[in-house]
Length: 167
Image (cartoon, rainbow, N blue to C red; front, side):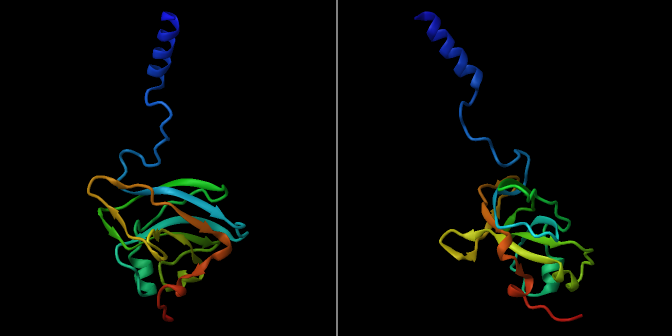
């Protein structure tokens, strides 16, 4: 019996934290992180999918382009059924955190970019899922479990969310 007890103690010690879930957020991340679930067929014209955040909800195309955080976003894998993401952000309360689908083509950092970009999904208010949810990034830390769905069958133009005028 003593040998069995020793083996059990050795196995538990070797496992460290046991069967805890693997962390989604990098411990050094200051920003937001979570899981993305993908639905629908990825369009043939897909160039990229990235995460963007806004401290205040954009009202115009100019604000949509100029106020995006991070300004140069990195892409997330989109050919899988689900993935994790982490996006570096300054501390603050972000009114809109979303996945942006980009069509093949060159961005110009102007209102014309809305022809290539679509809202593919966004973090929703848990109390009212018809509304965007606020994501608060604390100083020196991260907002965890900012999970949402990216639906390639429901790509929405930016003009469904903001007012755009011709330039």
